[in-house]
Image 1 (cartoon, rainbow, N blue to C red):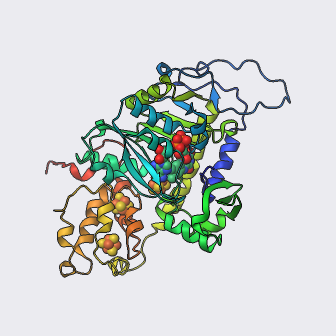
Image 2: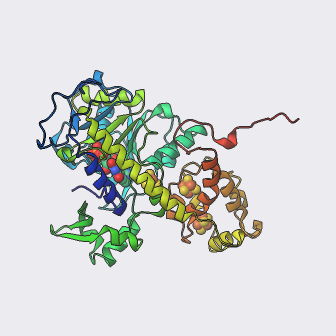
Image 3: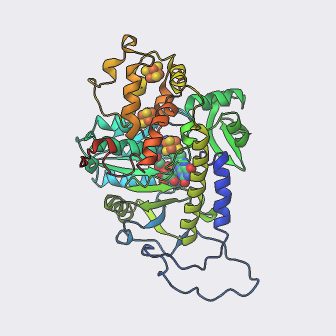
Length: 457
Ligand SMILES: Cc1cc2nc3c(=O)[nH]c(=O)nc-3n(C[C@H](O)[C@H](O)[C@H](O)COP(=O)(O)OP(=O)(O)OC[C@H]3O[C@@H](n4cnc5c(N)ncnc54)[C@H](O)[C@@H]3O)c2cc1C
Ligand code: SF4
Ligand code: SF4
Ligand code: SF4
């Protein structure tokens, strides 16, 4: 069963994708179209007669590609060459195929994949056993953990391959900037991300809204605006996604205003947006972002693990339109969530933080946080060091201004239910917006690392 790709907001995006692909397949591919696609600028093969039915939009253009056809900047649609993996994969099993090929052909010594405990929970495991890779096929939309800190423990041992959400990759890049992860040793496959629902929330929703035992759920999927849970007895149970999001039973708040939906910061950027109805669930749209990404995809194709064709122009257009709609929705939510605080700002922050028990969990999980045990903030995590607001938080607010990747982990782990991500972003948004600096997207030096000496007249 496929897991939910669409939330209430994504439904609109899906409709737009359908509209975007309704055009006839006559346009020539754009410059830079990968090998295997019709040549750029080629004239349409004859105008269809007036009133003739439009040919259905197709996801791919041309024949299967060889490794040598795959280039940086190319947009392709691919799938696992093994039928079972293609079926079990989130969207055709391409990612599993690339990971398995990388391990078995010696491009990496280890991979990090998910080990499922149940339908809603999994833990990342470091493995050099290809069986673990095959078992981890599929998308876990209820999994919120960010593997950045986990990856740090294994850096420099050997090459590692890992599938990442955009915010995971943002954390990895921020650690790399602080010399804590060596990007040369890590191969990253980015997964597009519409958002995640925490396991504890979906378990509650399954109990309270679906009136089911969460442990009886063995699959989930989205159809016609419904989030469908399949139980072990084969019965499907549906609820309206719109209504669930209205009741705050949907994605995490940070996902609703997230500004990176496609992991163009990884070596490969993979997802199902752009895969049209002819290949729905059977292929993944992949954009090759780096030379390393091209090499890993070529390795999977040339060694028979994956099959890849050039993405059609309609597929690329549909992917772009869907992403833009998602980003517009995120921008609207951001405006609402970060409306200026009325009145006394200090009092507002104090109120939010008054239940902090100084457990430090928010720092432990924070992906860009690079300090070790001697961190400045943890030296001041005693209430005796506090004046109005704990110095621990004051230091972190400042530290995170140019490094917070908006992943939501701090809010997720806080035992006092403090909406930390919102508080950190209240500090980080103005500076990151002003400096047009999106954390974790490229190798740009963090603004606070740059010392600018200006001549005083
Ligand atoms: C949380 C989430 C949300 C997504 N939302 C969208 C979306 O809105 N639009 C879109 O186009 N695509 C989305 N995707 C991507 C899409 O679902 C597929 O993962 C992608 O097309 C690759 O499919 P595949 O069959 O090639 O991957 P598979 O062959 O199934 O391999 C997937 C790999 O990703 C790992 N993985 C699964 N879940 C997670 C997770 N939560 N975090 C880290 N690693 C994980 C698995 O262990 C496995 O190794 C989302 C994926 C996830 C995980
Ligand atoms: S913050 Fe963004 S990338 Fe991370 S899980 Fe949410 S939507 Fe996905
Ligand atoms: S402060 Fe919170 S949201 Fe920001 S990077 Fe750290 S854990 Fe993620
Ligand atoms: S996780 Fe919550 S309770 Fe623990 S230190 Fe952070 S804000 Fe305080």
